[in-house]
Image 1 (cartoon, rainbow, N blue to C red):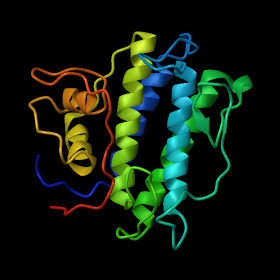
Image 2: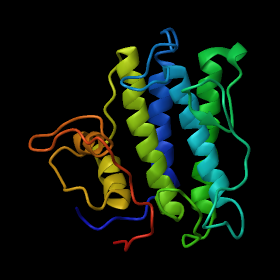
Image 3: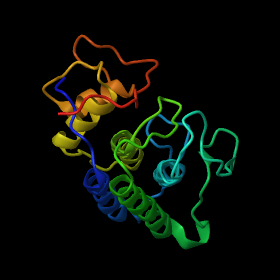
Amino acid sequence: MARNRRMIGDDVTRACDLARETLTAALDLDWQRPAGGLEWTCWETVEHLADCLFTYAAQLAPAKPSITTHVPVGWEYRRDGGPGLSIFADPAEGQAGLVQVFEVGGTMLTVMVDAVPPDRLSFHNYGTSDASGFAAMAVVEVFVHMHDVCTGLGRPWSPPADLCTAALARIFPDVPAAADPWATLLWATGRVALPGRPVRTSWRWDGRPQPQS
């Protein structure tokens, strides 16, 4: 795969805007359905996305972030088998409220990615990373988990090829290039098989800084 470009806040915004629009068009559906092949509901998966965006912003925020542990924001499991979360949507505000919480997380991360020095490093358990890496992680989280949600809701979801390509190059440098970057991203994250490539039963990205073109 080609050398990666630096991913920026606009990449996070594009991914989150597309997800927000898709979710808003599905507000009348039942988000308590399972999200694709996950053990989480669609609601829990969107809440997990909002939490990822918030916690990625938090990791970048300190002037001197730790490269050995997370920023000590509290978190909990709200049920056995559910996602571990630091932030939650108020269930009384319904699915539209959850979408707003997701939007807030995306905006926070977008601002943080563009505001911090590009060489600032912070901890992630998939590899200490920089702002570009956290932007790429966010794009992958949004795209892949929106695939899970849209599978559960029976809605179409097909994110932009250029963002899939950029995210793959940034945090999946070992994944061979293919004609369809979205299908390749789904394969890289264990969702689908590709010709000659069975479904991955284990995977992780590499967030460590890499040479940029």
